[in-house]
Image (tube, rainbow, N blue to C red; front, side, top):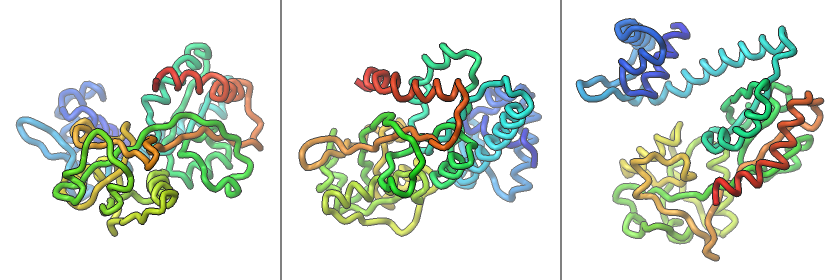
Length: 308
């Protein structure tokens, strides 16, 4: 197994085309095909379904893709860390984030900062929440973006400011008890009878949903298994295993038509709120402090304009 093989997997998953993936990776199509075949043989399973019309990840491929991306991200982080140590003039802002964060909104919000600070490189790292806490504490990232912290006492020493909020949507399961009720919006109380498929509580989604039900005196019925990705949540709902709740940015185009915005008893939208955190005990460099000021002073107004 080598990094090039993993790069090919990521590119093919993103493009669904051998020719486009080969172009992306600057190799010939036979080189990419042979490398993937060797990797599949080593791993013991097929990563992609290949037909004359389409190339798509198998269940095995969907299961391993997040790990492939973790290895590639770790390689990038190693390179950036080495560069930062050996070349202190190389300016970095390192941002860790929960997988629940809307990456398109984050990059849009940061674009004015990047234009003004063209000599500063922004490096992103997707992290589960425990890993994000450790990286903030160990000063391996400068900022963490995550669902708003409920347990403030557990996270003493963290500075924080709000980032954005996003409505939650209900995805009914096929042939489930609430299928007939779906519309543009649906009340939380109307879906309380459903059984929900959830992810492990590592990104903040499950705890957000649990807190939402608890605050309104409703029991959350959980399917005993766990999905490893937001796409799998949607696939399981389509298969009738359980309903799902997701932020709109994490719902695929195929499932959006059947999704309904979750509203509360007072008619307000159920939200997941994201905040930006940082280690108050760290001594930030000038450009990191400038980014912190930008997050606190500029981003709120910018987000309000983007999401209006």
